[in-house]
Image 1 (cartoon, rainbow, N blue to C red):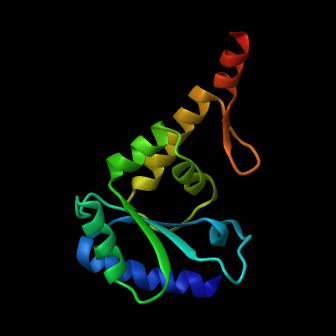
Image 2 (cartoon, one colour; image 1 turned 135 degrees about the vertical axis):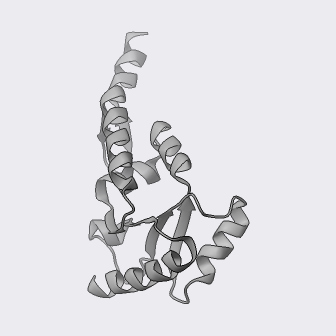
Image 3 (cartoon, helix red, strand yellow; image 1 turned 30 degrees about the vertical axis):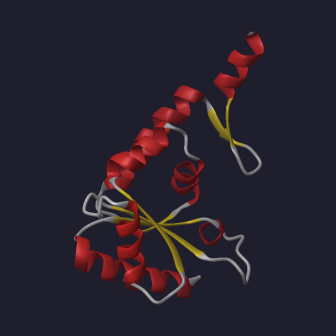
Amino acid sequence: MNGVINVLTEYSKAVSSKLGKFTGVLYGSMARGDYNVWSDIDFLVISDKLPENPLKRLEFLYSLTDTPIEVKGYTKDEFLRMIEKRNPLALDALVEGKIIIDDGFWKIAKDRFEEVKKKYELVKGHKKWVSLSMKRSFLKN
């Protein structure tokens, strides 16, 4: 795991040199600790300075490393909307992710997650998120 942290720390330096401050989070099996030899390194880059075009964004993020990192990039607003929509990637990253670098955004995201979690009574089931309030509403009808 230390090797992964070192790789992501170096990658974060490369991202910072182009974007300035950003939030970077290891998520997925490496963050949870249930990885195997075939697992990839899943990494979130959250910055308002990413290219708008999704293809250019990916091209930019992948151009900064030769290491096989599965990187996804989002603006802060995009990530907050993902939380509001209960996107499993965002929710899992917030609960299981390991912060590599943070420009202060992660607390904002965590606070939003707590609001959404309370509103929808979210619980993590076996590999998926369940809304108890929606389940109760469905059962009433």
